[in-house]
Figure 1: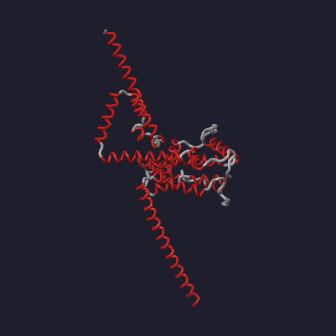
Figure 2: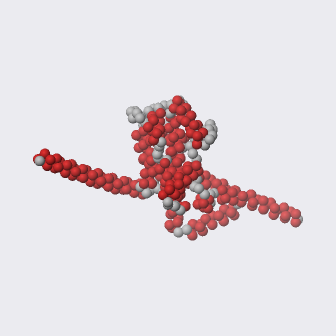
Figure 3: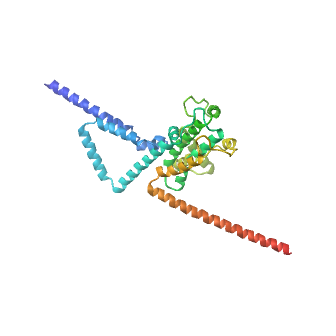
Length: 338
């Protein structure tokens, strides 16, 4: 009889351990606050998919016992009751922002997303190098930079989006280029990788720098610039400046390459591509997807104020120019009289 009781306790212990193991794995697999603050920011810190994290929690909960479900639900209820109204609203806002960022990434953050949005060309390509470069310029995430300038979205939320969008824009534009241009770009990428990294780009891998490499590059660049000026930055200021540098550089291009391919400003549209319609759609979607209705209204009001300010400045400059012209005319009249 004792042996039977002993076996029963061992079986119950094994069942309880098996039910608890997925929950422990799911909890410890989530990124901790200490990792986010002490380590260099990664894309996963900013773009952890909501569906993925939710699936992990559901998987862990489904394997737990009914008693554990009742305990966790009661603890969640107590935690929600402890949170104030402002904290609950803040958490809901962050969740909605993350959903909007994920939605934008699914539309413009990858090559596959751009192909679904703007279509694909034939395998041999349908755009000339000049048209390809113009398409790349149009797809750059300058509208994200405008959101930061309006003060509507934080730079730490926009920089990872801009990084992904730039890579997607480059690869999508290359996929539409004629095959001869793609061969030239491939050879140039191999040369640059061999020059900078001492190795060739492996087939099927991206020639673009990773997020960690980009972060280290601009962080060290900012530190060097500050040392030359005799100024020092604390950790938070350095992080914000690095985010801003990544956002700005994601919207800029190589001037030498632009001068090489954008000399002819004739017919830059080609195939089924209309750059004007793409630019208009990007400008429209970046607000419709990433901003809430109240933020869209705020952006419109801010733009109207900026337009009025610019109009006043232009009127002031025109007035000063007319005044200078009248003064010059009077001076010439005096010279003719004498």
